[in-house]
Length: 431
Ligand code: HAM
Image 1: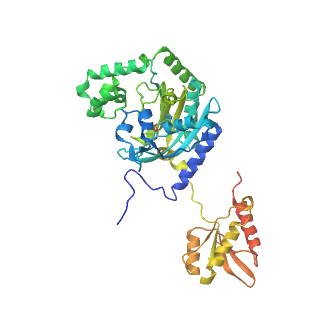
Image 2: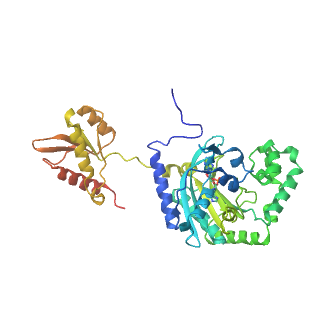
Image 3: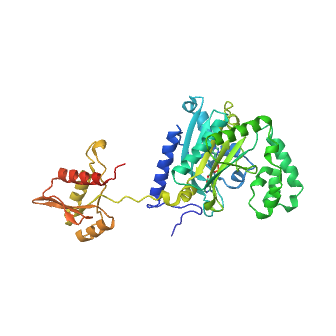
């Protein structure tokens, strides 16, 4: 029987995985610069957590959850996003609430049963940052600035920041009504999904990508006309902060998002070269969510970046060469195989304290290849040195494969290690 990777998922293989590791390291480094600390939450949570936060009427909850029952009949769901789990964890773990402001981040796979296409998967990775405890526009600006810093650090240049405000529980219902009333006048012309949204979630019509809905959306009332004074002032504050930080943005009065927990600011960063799935990440403010989960009123703002799209947008700048071995230990006779392994351990410094190891990458054949096949294998791996066992009466033999020269005569194990480490370190370009 032949198995295949499930639809909408993929394997990340050596060659590509180095780009992922590089991207993870870069983003972790930026998050640390801004003072964010990592939280790792489970991959599944109780289904209710997402229904209550993402929203019953959203596509994510209605059509895209991976939900299952465990053996005790509990309904669990593979997380479709990271904000709700993080807020749950924030409320459950007092250390996360020690300061009045908490800056937290997460990184990991998310699951949505979507129609797969380029840049859209059923398992995808997100890097998300959440700032809990501030209602100030400066917090929104920090989040957008952080997002932009990650993008520019990994080499994404053609990014556009779109910003909008969706109002709060005071003014949003007014806007929802205005939108419903407007689209009711042209309901017949809406696509089937939007006809349904008219009753379930009218604001989502603004996000419809069906071409026949586009001209109707163009004529819809702008949210900005419905914002209450406090929300309008907050939105002005965010725009001013962005301008003062020198962050270019476009006000996008029709930007809505696919999750229901947002209040006030929402934003997205688009990279045009990504085509249809051009949102590399997005986020916004969710001032009611902590309270909805039973906690004290805690304003918050956050962002998530899609890792696959980020890598795609970063393109060549995220290319990382896969490191080959420094040394291959070649067993000259079949009975020297274990001796080759012992020497390989020694050269890696595995018996040394970690800080003295020196990180030599050393590989050894375990397939029982002939010595000439081992040499071919070492050249294919582009190993810099070959060391031969068993040692002859006059000591080990070492060959610099790149220079095509034999190394020092009669080296001991220690001499070999020192010789290779000395040359390897002198080859490393100074930083
Ligand atoms: P979201 O817009 O649903 O927001 O997802 C954020 C990003 O995840 C998207 O911009 C995209 O890059 C990536 N993404 C989403 N779905 C897929 C998919 N099927 N395949 C590949 N990439 C995908 C959230 O998830 C919110 N939790 C963001 C947030 C954080 N809001 C406040 N804090």
